[in-house]
Image 1 (spheres, one colour):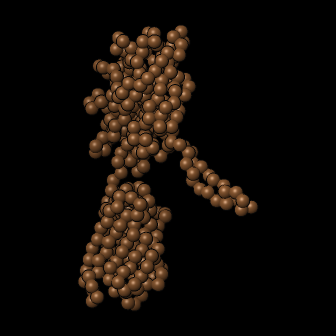
Image 2 (cartoon, one colour):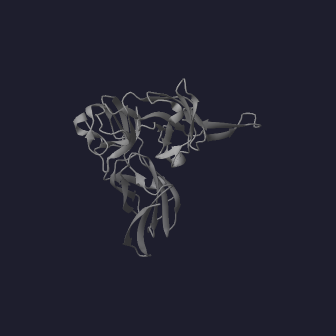
Length: 329
């Protein structure tokens, strides 16, 4: 957890104010955050949180909800409160607690609200041929808000720019746009890079050989632990008996299901990073790279899905049953 503090002198000891973030290492922009504010030797006591007013300055506040505070304890030696902050933009927030009734008192300290890390949350499709000309829809979380497509920089790899970028929306939380893939001089695993952000947001992208295609037919969704079988149809790559497959940069086992139909069965590995790789939607798309002996490549997409988790558990009306509600992506 992170904290900030300030201090001054009082007749009984040095008055110091510390802010400790609850349940996280730091407060992040545009996400609600709770902090514990502790004042050592406050010089006053209060009976309830309503005896203190809370003001948050230095950053823009949303219209609702308002910052709220609750009293943990109050003695002559220590005053402790929990402050629930609404989603705030990045910056330095000043928290000021004031006791307006006699004897009056005021305590203030600062809290850093850190910028979010920009990530690409959706890339559809995540495979295109080296000829270029494929329209791709990209959604990025916490990309700096833009008002026009001209403010976006989108490239295949570090320096091959996409064409015809069209902005769909942009706000503090996410930005979505379409862009047309450029022609590529090489095939294989690459990446899409999006800015403005520092560093740019990147996501894996597969550049396939012209005339080669692959698509997942069944077993296309599974858990983060992997171990499931996906059936992939392949066209334009020769006999499927001679094909090899890779995921996340490493070879994965596969076998021909039907040479006549051009189908492969692929053993999907575990998701690197496990459950931590999932975004808010609870899903993660990954490419199954398919290669033939001549070096042609294409790819299909499978989707890792977060496992359902118990969201709540309550006794039923009769008292003899526990009703469990599960979340699902």
